[in-house]
Image (cartoon, rainbow, N blue to C red; front, top):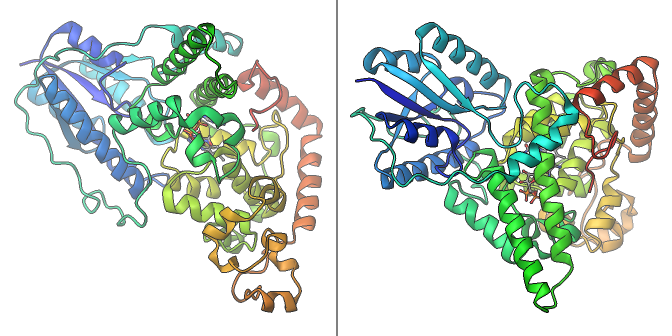
Length: 503
Ligand SMILES: Cc1cc2nc3c(=O)[nH]c(=O)nc-3n(C[C@H](O)[C@H](O)[C@H](O)COP(=O)(O)OP(=O)(O)OC[C@H]3O[C@@H](n4cnc5c(N)ncnc54)[C@H](O)[C@@H]3O)c2cc1C
């Protein structure tokens, strides 16, 4: 019996799903397939938290498919070998999938699958996914395409889907079978579309009111940001449905306002910011789509060699283990390790501290963060890590001062004390820079620096000035300027040229 396959990857949903709709339209028996790929499970950017989230998404996808008259088939193996085995047994006519802009491993895998499909005479149809455009020839056209795609009607969930042939499915892999370490901290967010929709709905109904003004502080951001990022990363939600849900909310609020109701203006600002962040999401992923090597290489080669040979493992490990002696940095790292999420501003500060104060090349820090971020999305992640390290040449240089961020975003030291309890007795005045206390004060407040909490691993002013001088010198060379012009041509945002989204 010949079959078609809907191949699920990072699109674990049944609504707004082009490949599923195409399979339904053809009506042939269909296999709904997810393949656990050993090389992805063992990849440097993958973690047990991702795996747990993934399994929850798969369980819910299977439930949903069963309600529609089929089920999910799980396989474990390398691709295209899994397809080859299925083809020999059942004869695959067509594979429907989404275009994926993932890590280098998925890029190589997709090339192997395409080559195999061509050789085996199997039709492979890859559907466009969100606002990322494959084979984009002109960056100037990108924004228009994004708008058009976000306006298009959502693809409804099918009422029924063609049945699967009688093929045994593997049981979901366990953490051990996947070869992963046991989970050290349960993530705050669990996988699956139901959870994703609940986060989106509560954001649009209540939590998002002060999104714009509260997104930058770690005290308020966890509640006021949408928190839909892991659900977008695993494809439980589509970007288009998030954009359209935001627009619908806006439309309802405007209608209520026109009917005379007095509404908080903050809603309108927050919803506009939300939509622009969703556009930024696709904008960044587009860069990786156009240049997959961004995962490993500086987007601007003029910065090659700037940090590569100065990597200090001792500084790197202190940063990873929240032992920098900078309370805001350590608090953010601990918060992230505990829950798998951190707001944008604090992610930028963590990365900037690693890249400038510690002068670490972005690659190792970015992998460490990738494993911690439940919402790890290679296209956003590597571009942001490079931006915060100053190696794109087209974005403003921002070297965050941890003490300044503490003063602005956590003035009473509430966040710091929650996550760095060693500093519990330290008064507000010293909380961001406890090493500035005298020995007498340290004893008085019960925190001896160097014993109860580390001394700063680098001297802020010296590290800051040195990094500033080096990055601006590198940026001002003729080569850097020439390369920056071509980086801008290929990847730059046309809305705010030569700048970054900032917050
Ligand atoms: C060093 C660094 C690494 C990052 N790595 C990732 C990553 O791996 N995955 C990821 O999704 N985001 C990443 N971000 C961007 C941003 O921090 C997160 O998208 C955001 O914090 C997720 O929380 P949220 O869903 O509540 O976002 P909200 O503020 O509610 O925004 C809604 C959605 O817009 C998108 N978005 C928001 N901010 C940005 C941005 N600056 N750039 C691109 N898209 C954005 C996300 O999809 C997000 O879910 C990174 C930022 C930095 C500075």
